[in-house]
Image (cartoon, rainbow, N blue to C red):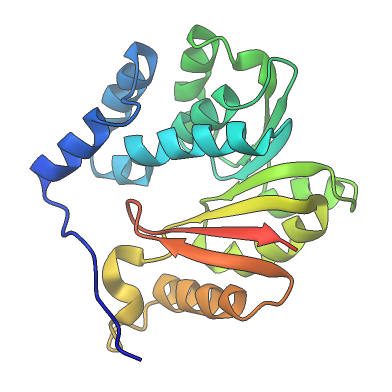
Amino acid sequence: MGETHKFVPMSAELHAYLVSHGSPPDEVQRALIDETHALGSVAIMQISPEQGAFMTLLARILGARRAIEIGTFTGYSALCLARGLPDDGELICCDVSEKWTNIGRPYWERAGVGHKIDLRIAPASETLADLPRKPSFDLAFIDADKSGYVDYFEALLPRIRTGGIILVDNVLWMGAVIAPENDEEDTVAIRRFNDLVAADPRVDCVMLPIADGLTLLRKR
């Protein structure tokens, strides 16, 4: 069977068009993007605007009431996820840095979602271990240390309801996943994770070329 390779290379101009023709960042989101950008090269850890809009929409489509994210950075992904939850929804954020997460807190409040967010400053493995091992979450987002991806996935899966979604960021790793000469620890960890979930019968898996690659895993 022949295969058609259908994709569009993303220039800066095309990316700007894409963002402006979706749900672009509002004033609060734009201010958080700008403050994070001012941090310098570390700002690359922030998710892209279209990814944030997608995550808000997905939370709403799922009717998610309870969500969890592993890796919060300056809080943009948390802001987007929390906006997709109902007013009495809950988002548990797992991160080890008060420095970075403190940047996001005022923006959560300005956006009116601070009451939905439960930020827990501790290694995510410890926070996850303290949570009941039962399916109580509708949606999860993994965007933390790459060497921990497999462990985070295994810890989250029993805590996600059937039909719930686990989102995983950076799965294309700037293209390094297909560079055989790249044997850096993070690259190897991402490849291992991608191979594992693609063959895992417990989930439906699709990898999307959003930003640096976003995998959606639906629990069967």
